Length: 497
Image (cartoon, helix red, strand yellow):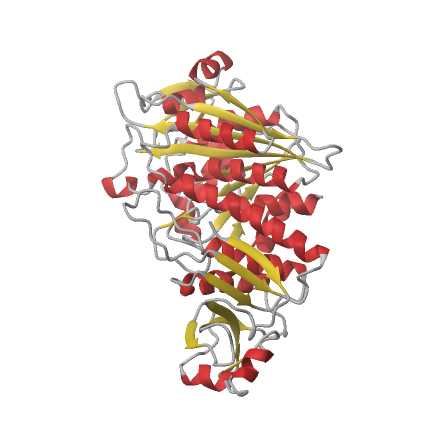
């Protein structure tokens, strides 16, 4: 586990295994941002020339390594491209990504100092957050754990001793802890993280940080009439769970409800996925993991916002007891749904949870779900889709995502989508699909919206793309689980306070 501290030490005088600096793209060349003056002097004022000769262009994510100058105490200098800064100011997301890239590039270095621009507390938080997120690795199932993760991280800043800087560092540490936990859960094989185990871990984490946790088992779900969760989970030998977390500070300024899809493995049920389509389906619980992680982080930070979270957990498996296409489920709250595709299961567990969340009468409900491949087709693997029943609620969440550095794009919920869902079933209130091959993400959002009580603002985040990274690492994002949405939800709570 890495430690991270703030220091006013000079970049050329700090004693670490490596120092990370930024390089700004400037026209056809590069320039150095503030905070690198001493290092430049140690290179005889020719650091830009040295980096340029080695091919540095300042492009975002680019890494150029050079030996540390002889007067310096660090043997390695890692220059990371920050991209252009046309207005003279760097975006916090550029700093966050550069910090993650620099820490990953350090590899065998045990201690790393980050001499990136930190003119204010927000930039300090971005650098610290990026560094911590960039040092993540999942080695639980490795027979020999690699030892190439930096143990000590130091953010060099003139603001190190200020109250604002210390608060920024604390938030970065707590948020990164939550993201790491979510990544661990998403990366864990489904044989070791079925609904019962997932619920138990949520309960343990809640107790550790003073968050109240209630777990409804299969008997309680049946007694309560949670037909969506039970219907999806009935084909598995691992029974479903609904986990409720609650954090209530004194005099909360608002009440947020988080709802997360927790399908610990999605085979598609009897509407079976292809073999390749199942490989990453251990990640289908990323939404539930994110809302649990964010709730605990908000509690640890003591933000004056009431949070109630629901994680709907089930394993979608084919068997003799599995739900069949054309089965009708009696959802929590009274609606009936004809299941015409058992692989459209996430909306079924979320439907139950959204009705239950509405009963708490929050000011805003946000659900997070790896819901549709259609959203990935529309927005790619890096961007989440944001749907809502009001523009103001949607914009509020999207603004939080922008500040947090998580890519998100607003998408509509056409009114005809719900009509199509209702008309597609001849025996129930609505079907779980429209029967059309297009607009799948929009139809799923329309389905969910029908389970939110009238008068409650609601935002749906389809994170099917960015929740799991099948490619190589970049910036502070590793291969595998990314922990997407945790930072957005924490930012949303922080901005409300």
